[in-house]
Length: 112
Image (cartoon, rainbow, N blue to C red; front, side, top):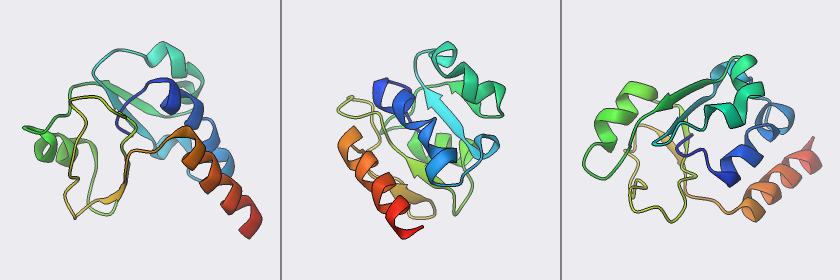
């Protein structure tokens, strides 16, 4: 997950609950150390890194934090350093508003 602002902080607890992805599979990268704000997820196995991912370095940084086939969620919404184009070897979920993320979770609940 790129970004650890308000939307990410709200989404992180929902991921293992509704999308069945364990915290141990979650890596969060933000340019600001907001790790204290997601302490529960980190204590449960999520990884947090302070790093800047931007247009110039996104391929190198994503290769470090994610492997081919990983799901990359860019929640650094409307931030100038947000990655405009995730390489195709990663699955990408474009920047989401909290409403869209909640709609995805609602759809998942209906299916199951």
